[in-house]
Length: 234
Image (cartoon, rainbow, N blue to C red):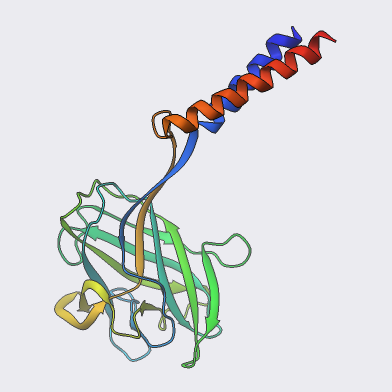
């Protein structure tokens, strides 16, 4: 009975070891800058404090074929406000929703999905936001658009939320379009904003490790089984 339990435990260890964490990066616009510039993303529901009702859409070429379940981006808010929600849209055209859309709650503090990084020289708090999303399949080499809209804060001000522009405020390789009060006015004048789209999931990886790795791991398991068998006989 003890030997049977020991064998079962070893089988469980082997199964867990051959289950891996796989991540597919669909597109990455580059790291968060946080110091130079950002575009307001409070529209189309809320005006920013300058009075315009603006949101932003970024066109990009998918580097990998996958659906997306994780979006990371850089967000600015005037110091003293904390992010509470963000709307996202994924489509095959600017501000399109045919690939996916939704509104995601944002949380701060320990374990939150919106992590405070620093307060920049403009008096804005900069956050690294990582939220769970849903999308349809995207094919490598095709163009898609990610839009961020209706950003809100916990204090109900909803007028200072902005999307970070990386690369010293020049933007990345994505194409940026801006919309005012629901009308797309086209190019923003700079490259895309900071964001990364990925598929992150735990998957069975029986056929992923190199043959030599499997052999070494198998030898270790067999050796451990032999030791336990001898101990159980004592």
